[in-house]
Image (cartoon, rainbow over all chains, first blue to last red; front, side, top):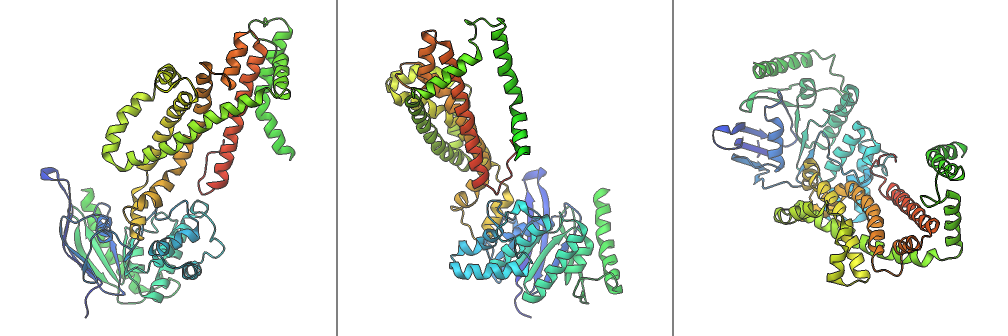
Length: 259
Length: 255
C-alpha cells in the first residue's frame, strides 16, 4: 500500500478561547487513498463541513497535521478542487468563462483552454449553454458547471460540500449518477460531505459517520459491492442493508444531539 | 407594438392628468398668473428656448460641469470604497468623516468652496464631485464588504492569489451595488449642479433659472425646470439601458 492521497493526523479545531471555546473537531485521524471515494455523513453540527474547509485550506486547524500527497497544506490551492452547495460560480462569467476560470489563472494558452472547456461541457452535458450566465441556469445545471469548473483545474482531490443538498430529489439522483460516472472514468480521489445517508452509501466506497460535540469519527463502513451504472441501487439487498446500518449509526447521533 | 405603446401611455397618464389639471385651473382663473403661469405658456416658452437655440450653450456648460464632477466622483468613489472594504485602517479613518459629510446639504458648502477655490468652475465642479462621491463610496463599500465568503474561497481554490482577489472577485461581485450608487449619483449631480449655478455664474441651466426668475419671466423659468426634469429622466433611462445591456449577468429590478 502506497502513501495515502490525503492524510489527517490528530486534527482538532477549536473556535474561540478559554471556557467559552467550542470544540468543533477533536482529534481526527483519516487517510484517504488515491482513487478512493470517501463520503462523510453526520448530523448537523458534527463538524463535517469544517473538516472539509480545513482540507481546503480555508481554515487553519488548532492542532494536528493535514498532508496532501505528503505535502502539508498551507492555504487554499488548485490542487484541491472544491464544490460548495452554492456560490461556487462567478455570476458575472458565462458557463464557458466559469469553467475556464482556473485555466486562465494558471495561464493555459487560449486554444488549449477552449479544447478543455468544450470537453468538460460535453462531460457534464451542458452543450448549448456555454454562453449563458449562472442566473439563467437551474440549480442542477449550476452544480454541473461547478463540477466542470473544478475538474478543469485537474485537482489531486475533489472536495464536495453537500453539493447536491439544495437540489430536488430527482435532480439529486441524476447528478449523483453522473458524479459516479465521472469518478469511474477519471478515478479522481473524492472527499464528499453530506447529511443524506442514502447519498453517502450510493457514492462512497468508504462511508465515515461522524458524531457531534465534539466532532469526531464515530464509525467507518466499507461498501464491498458496486453500485450499478444508472444508479439503480434500490433493488440491491446489500445496498438496503448497508444503508440501514449507516442510518442507525447516524440516528443515534441525531437523537443524542436532540437530548 | 400597440401593447407596449399602451403600457407606456398608461404610465404617463398620471402626469398628463396633472398637467391637464394645471392648465384647466389656470383657464378657470383658479390659479393666478403670479402664483403659476398656465402650462400652455410654459410649454410655449420651452419650445421657444429650444427653437431659438438659447438653451444649448447653457445645457453644454451645465453638462460639462456635472459630467466632470460626476466622473471624478465615480472613479474616486469606487477606489475609496474598495480601499475601505479591504483595509481596516482606511475604513477607520474615512468612515466617521463620510458619515458626518453625508447629511450635510452640499450646496451649503458652495460659499466656502468659493473662498477656497475661487468663484469659477473649479469650485462648482468640486462641490458636485463631493456630493456624488458619498453615494458611490457607500455603495462600493457595502458591495465589497458583502461579497460572499464562499465566492472568495471558490476563487482562491481555483488559483486566484490574495492580491488578485480584489480585481477578479471583489470588484465584479460588488458591481450591482456600485451601479445602484452611481445611479443615485446621476440624480445628485443634477440637483447640486443647479444649486451651484445659482451663485456667481454666467452660463448654465441653474444660471438661466435664476436669471429668468429674477426678471419675473416665470414661464421661461419653469420651462428650464421642466427641461432639467426631462434631462434627468432621459439620463437615468439611458444609464439603466446601458446596465441592462452590459451587465446582463445580473437581474436588475424591473423599473
